[in-house]
Amino acid sequence: MERIIDNRDERMWGMLCHIAAFAGLVIPVAGNIIGPLVVYLLKKEEFSFVEDQGKESLNFQITVTILMFVSGMLIIVGIGFLLLAVIGIGALVLTIIAAIKANEGEFYRYPWTIRFLK
Image 1 (cartoon, rainbow, N blue to C red):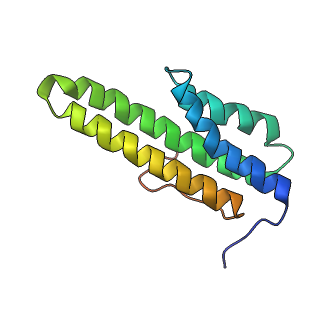
Image 2 (cartoon, rainbow, N blue to C red):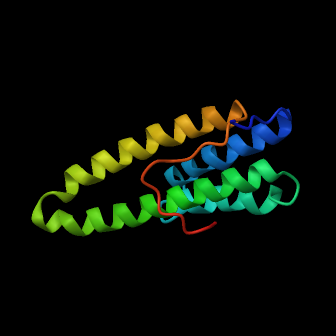
């Protein structure tokens, strides 16, 4: 049975865990990690949903950062440009889906994510 969160504030902060990754557009180096980390650290004690979604967002953004770094190095052999585009678009789409699901109170799990934080 799937758990759904009813508390509106908890859902909003859970959504912000995912949306905060767009700080990477403003802070170029690891901003996509800093944004969710700030929300996670501020609200993890208050809301268990935020703790869960914050870890999920951080795990995904760390995975994306590693993949982008590797793709950047693969530019030398030519495939890196394509990989950067695919990873960037995939991260954008999955982050938006995660934010929508969190706002609906669902415990979202990103696909293809390394679980650094458990």
